[in-house]
Length: 151
Image (cartoon, rainbow, N blue to C red):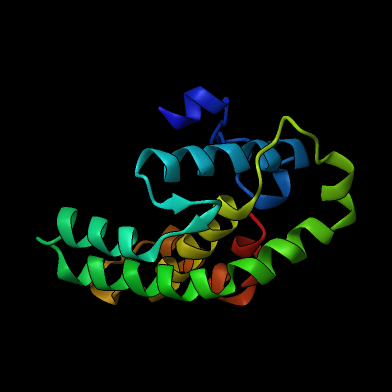
């Protein structure tokens, strides 16, 4: 729903690397992430409301406590870093050059990419598929740990 509403397109088979995502696409992603957090009512005044996040995961993911715990850990970690990360993102010359009023404040997308990164790296081993693709993806992400944080 949010991808359609914000015209955010997830990578296609020809856009497999983060380097293939244009700055314009990344900036559209700011509105997609904001839409997702707004849909679940997790933000208050452009700040993540951790009480709402905890309530959401405890309510909707109670059948999977392992998932709930890892997601809440990721949110806790990312929430504490979001102000500095947002400032750092906005200071990038290419972001300043492309930042216009048609894009959303990046706080939501910074938190979301951080959560994805942390959850991805802390996913329990028994949940990983032992395929070449998964093993290589995890190895790449651990080697190039800044890649997911700049989504």
